[in-house]
Length: 436
Image (cartoon, rainbow, N blue to C red; front, side, top):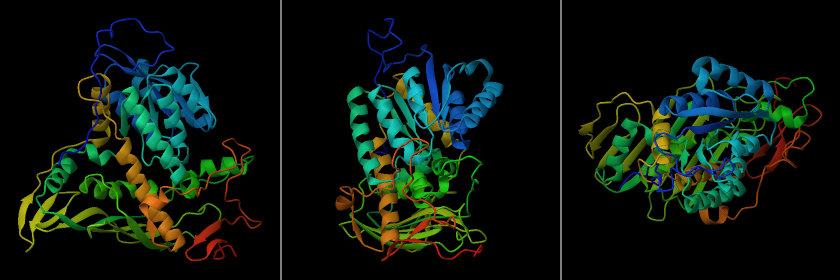
């Protein structure tokens, strides 16, 4: 089966007609300069800005936004130093939780690299305004956000807008090669998969003097489920997406799992996320995916996707390999140099400039994120969940409002501890702390 990719409409006969700045630029010819806005100026956002400038010679960074002005201004200064006149953001560096609107309003293309809990809002607004989008993964942290992303995907298709996902392995030359072999049936019908992302803990950021609780959590966003989705979504979504890819982008029907916190026991910087999860995803035809992810220091690590089929087996990352049922190697990859982060932006501009058909990755990026959400909720609750039923869920971890005075759903108690999800029980305050 064919692997889906990014695309866009060719310039029409009207492409040369002068257009008002207030009108969305759906078509961008070879010589049109594309004004790019960056929303979310952390490490991934700055990386995406570098990737986009390296991918197309006639684009410029035109506006920047971040929740915090030092981040936005730091990105502006760093990009200006590296790319000089290709960064023109004078008077267009914005801060705050609604600053994404300022960027969308003045740009042709927006890079959505803010905390995942905010991403569905930026996507909806950008599509409403008729702007092209590069949307980092994951695209939401709850089912309400997923439903919004599906709606934005539909609207983007109707408007002929390019929507490229940050699920970058779909653009990696080597991974595409082996995945296309899997999708084309070289291992037969897939019967099972083992999907792993076993690594160490990531960063934590301390509260700053004068922070409201909302500020403190946004600053330390990775460690709160409403902002990152938990690491099973924010990080492991890459591996879950390979499973979805192998199944023709058809999601599973049921899921159950287990997980918890074994190293993330100090408070409050560890927030409310887990550090280990395992989930089983089931398809109606009996195909079963076994998903394992962990963020624990000092442990064995692996990031891989293994597939078993009726004719053989495949491993995807590193040097892709296919073996028969007896373990004999029938194909082994000769890897080539591949910068997937830049390649996805190259395809983005091909789509916008009409060199290929319009790309819209919205459906698979939403389904991959939804797999992460269902796996998380199966671990949090200890229940077996159904995909169709979960898509109707109204459960949310959102704050009371998206402003600095808003109240996050999980507020610390008098000891600075946060409620933790306990399977079969519900939300309880963490009772194990080295500080006690």
